Image (cartoon, rainbow, N blue to C red):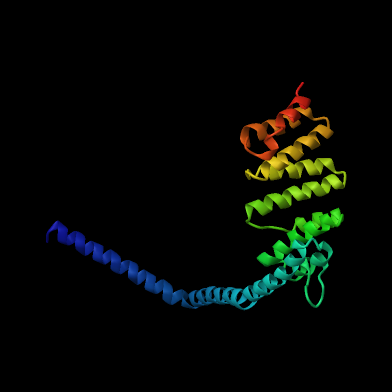
Length: 225
């Protein structure tokens, strides 16, 4: 018998051995395997059922309510947008409470925070804004920055500075220079002139075409030693 034939026969024997071992393993543990597979299938079915029959319908319901409250918000009727006008509108506060786990519910939290801010209720604004967790970069920057504005109104300047810098660090071409400038002003108020200079310099170098850069030399001049 040639070496090639012998090698082929050895390979077939190895395959047969593996198959025999696998069959024996399955036969020995078939009950546990069936239970495991059944558990995985059950989890998948439950997840699909929750998404299709619970989450998606509630997302649609939340969206329908959002449209109504957004109309009041656009008309600067912040209290009605926030608290609702039953039976016509649920209001952002209730939407966030009942649908908080949906995308629209999280967005309602942000809108509620803006309404609280415009109504001068800054503690409530911070609480609502902190519940927003969205992927929209522009809106996310605005929410973080507005939280800083709330802390300014609450005379908690150190916290305000943290939020302004966090918003600026998101590198949004429109909003980042806005919050860099606010961070600079807060640093000036804390007599941290080196940090303020750093904020203003970043606006000048990184966002030279922004409205904030138009008169930034004036701000730089007053903090430079």
